[in-house]
Image 1 (cartoon, helix red, strand yellow):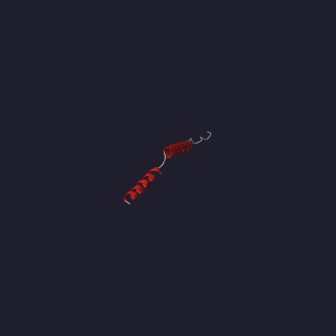
Image 2 (cartoon, helix red, strand yellow; image 1 turned 60 degrees about the vertical axis):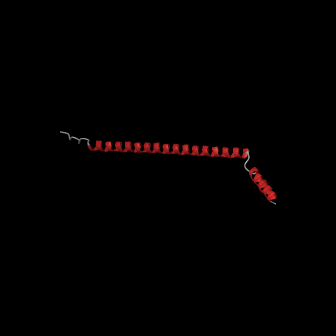
Image 3 (cartoon, helix red, strand yellow; image 1 turned 90 degrees about the vertical axis):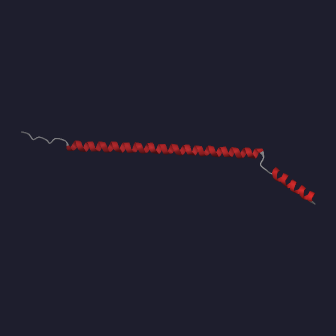
Length: 89
């Protein structure tokens, strides 16, 4: 009886080990992992690029507004500084 039980346990362990993933399945899993990491890296790069572009656009917009405000202030100051018209003598 002990021999029979031992044989059944050994057969069960061999069956369990034989049901593991094959080399092909392991290669597919590794490829999927690498593809996933590559996709994450591309997303990170795209996000970084988008942030840099947004930052550059914001800086350009602020600079354009600053120039417009400066021009407007200069025009206002120039109009106030015009000399008064002299009357005819």
